[in-house]
Structure formats: structure tokens, C-alpha cells
Length: 312
Image (cartoon, rainbow, N blue to C red; front, side, top):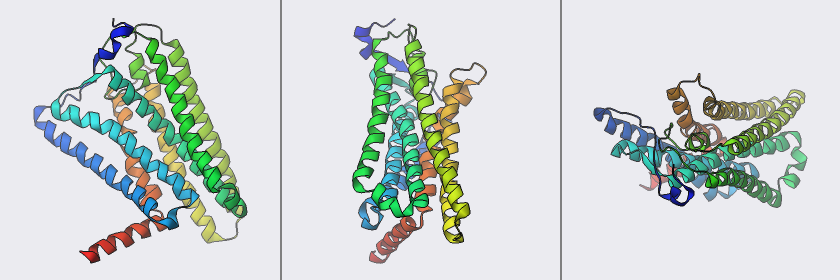
């Protein structure tokens, strides 16, 4: 048992990938390639939106939060994972584990609130286009963005501050990355308060996001059905369809590992696999769905790319 006074000096051991020696460098190169591709795609979207004044619109400003969040989530995973693969050292200090877990949950929560805010933006743009400028003005946009980040950070700060009162009984983590369910398994005492609050925040995020997305998309669908302009209807349905697919994928990818921790029937290796895919697939898919597929962003990127080629 590690009392509160010495808990900051505790060194934990994350679950090892157990790679054979011949696979260490290929695995490291493969992981590094994926991480660099994630950085390239997402930072391209960030730079494109920031440098083009024509893209300084509510929809793109809200979208800007997504690649920033995806880079944060991917960096949080790959910085530790690539180091452990190359060095074969899976140790991590308890404070570093808490920080990693905090960023994990900030990333997960932000994914939901960003998609929720984007769904609301599309609802106003499609269902009330004449009022869009008045509703999504600069002041309201700042309130929406600052509000969703402050709400997310406050909820997660409370969640992880609850760990400060617990003592640690074991140092072996059952997962490849630190997050709330895996950290709770290290504690000596009853973690009922943590468990209840964790479930409360889980339900809160999912119900809030699902309610807003369902409400907005039902109204968007009704508007599209009654809209006689087929081009506008098809464009709206295509935009919302991709948005809905990403949202449902995120729902499954985040819920499964959290539920799996509370079920003995789910094999540990499946839980571990899904616990890291949420930091890989969304950061890979989101810039393709929301960025490069968008006509305005794609044209800006192609224009910049062509100008760079001609200047060489």
C-alpha cells in the first residue's frame, strides 16, 4: 500500500504489447508513420482555416476545434506508446498517469461537445437560414466555444480530483494507456464515489449529445424533405449523413471499452484494442470527412499546393 504522502513517487507499469524483438522497429516505424500522417492531415486543416479569411465563418471556426482536439488526443497516446515500443520500458509515474488519463477524458468529452455544437450550427443554417447570421454571430460563437471547453474541463477536473484521496495498492495497469476505469483498479479503498460520478458524466455526455443530434437531424430531415430545391437538399443530406456516421462511430468506439471494464465476459485484448482505436481512427477519419471532403477547404488546399509547386 502506498499512502497519500508517497503516492507522487509511485511508478506504475502499463500493460506491454509483448512484441518479439524482430517486430520492435517495424512496429515503431508503423506507429510513427500513422502519427505523422495524423499530424499532417489535421494540421493542414488548422493552417488552411487560420490563414484563409474566407473560411473565418462559424461553421469552420467550430470545425477548427476538431483537428486541434484530435492532435491532442493522438499525441497523448503516441508519445507514450512509441517510447514504450522503442525502449521496451512501460513504466510511468503516477502523476504522469493521472495527467495522461485527464487528457484522455478531455479529448473524449471534447469530441462529443464539438460534434454537438457542429450539429446545432448545421440545424440553424439549414432550418433557419435567414436567422443564421443573427444567431451565430461572433459573440454567440465565442460563448459556444468557450462554454463547451470550460464545461468539459470542469467536469473532468472534478473526476480526477477525486483520485487525490485514495491510496494505491498495486502498480500494474491492465491497459496500454491510463484512463479512469484502469486507474480505479489500482486503488485500495472503495471507489464507489468515483464510479458513480464517472457513470454520471458518461450518461450526461451521451444523453446530451444524442438528444441534440437527434433533435437537430430530425428537423433537418423534415426541412430537406419539404425543400423543393434538390441541390440544396442533396448537399444538406450528404453533409449531415457523414456527420451522423462519424457520431455513431464515436459512440461505439468510446462506449465499448468503458462498458468492457465493467464486464468479465469481454476479453482483455479486445478491450485494450478498442481503448486505443479511439485515438487513431477519429483523428484519421475526421480530417477526411470534415476537411478534405469540404469543397471550400479542398479548393484552398489545392490552390496553396499548386502555388508552392509553381514557385519551386
